[in-house]
Amino acid sequence: MDNFLAFGGSFLQYVVIFVILVAIAVFGVFTGIALRKRKDAKELALHEDKKEEK
Image (tube, rainbow, N blue to C red; front, side, top):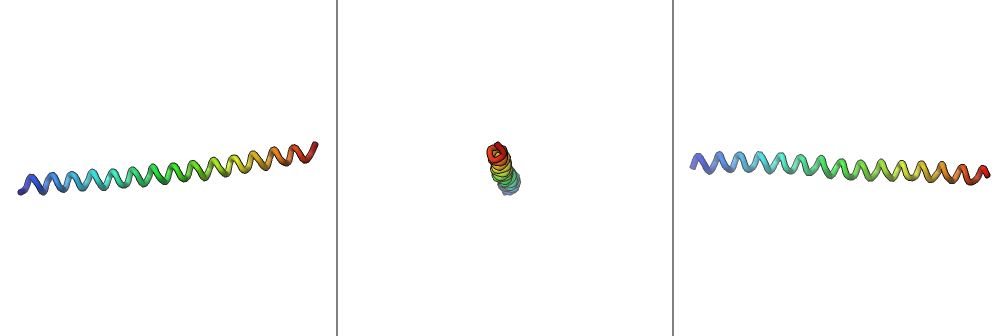
Protein backbone atom coordinates (compact mmCIF):
# COMPACT_ATOMS: atom_id res chain seq x y z
CA MET A 1 0.00 0.00 0.00
CA ASP A 2 2.85 2.37 0.76
CA ASN A 3 4.34 1.80 -2.69
CA PHE A 4 1.03 2.67 -4.32
CA LEU A 5 0.79 5.92 -2.37
CA ALA A 6 4.38 6.82 -3.27
CA PHE A 7 3.68 6.10 -6.93
CA GLY A 8 0.46 8.11 -6.83
CA GLY A 9 2.21 11.06 -5.21
CA SER A 10 5.00 11.02 -7.79
CA PHE A 11 2.51 10.67 -10.63
CA LEU A 12 0.46 13.58 -9.33
CA GLN A 13 3.61 15.69 -9.00
CA TYR A 14 4.51 15.05 -12.66
CA VAL A 15 0.96 15.82 -13.78
CA VAL A 16 1.04 19.17 -11.97
CA ILE A 17 4.43 20.03 -13.49
CA PHE A 18 3.12 19.04 -16.94
CA VAL A 19 0.04 21.24 -16.57
CA ILE A 20 2.19 24.20 -15.49
CA LEU A 21 4.55 23.76 -18.44
CA VAL A 22 1.65 23.50 -20.89
CA ALA A 23 0.15 26.68 -19.45
CA ILE A 24 3.47 28.50 -19.88
CA ALA A 25 3.73 27.25 -23.48
CA VAL A 26 0.19 28.38 -24.32
CA PHE A 27 0.87 31.77 -22.74
CA GLY A 28 4.06 32.08 -24.82
CA VAL A 29 2.27 31.21 -28.05
CA PHE A 30 -0.51 33.74 -27.50
CA THR A 31 2.00 36.40 -26.45
CA GLY A 32 4.06 35.75 -29.58
CA ILE A 33 1.00 35.99 -31.80
CA ALA A 34 -0.06 39.26 -30.18
CA LEU A 35 3.44 40.76 -30.51
CA ARG A 36 3.68 39.71 -34.17
CA LYS A 37 0.29 41.23 -34.99
CA ARG A 38 1.34 44.47 -33.30
CA LYS A 39 4.60 44.55 -35.26
CA ASP A 40 2.83 43.83 -38.56
CA ALA A 41 0.28 46.59 -37.91
CA LYS A 42 3.07 49.03 -37.09
CA GLU A 43 4.97 48.17 -40.29
CA LEU A 44 1.80 48.44 -42.38
CA ALA A 45 1.09 51.89 -40.96
CA LEU A 46 4.68 52.92 -41.70
CA HIS A 47 4.40 51.77 -45.34
CA GLU A 48 1.07 53.55 -45.78
CA ASP A 49 2.58 56.79 -44.47
CA LYS A 50 5.45 56.52 -46.95
CA LYS A 51 3.03 55.92 -49.85
CA GLU A 52 1.01 59.01 -48.92
CA GLU A 53 4.13 61.20 -48.90
CA LYS A 54 4.96 60.38 -52.53
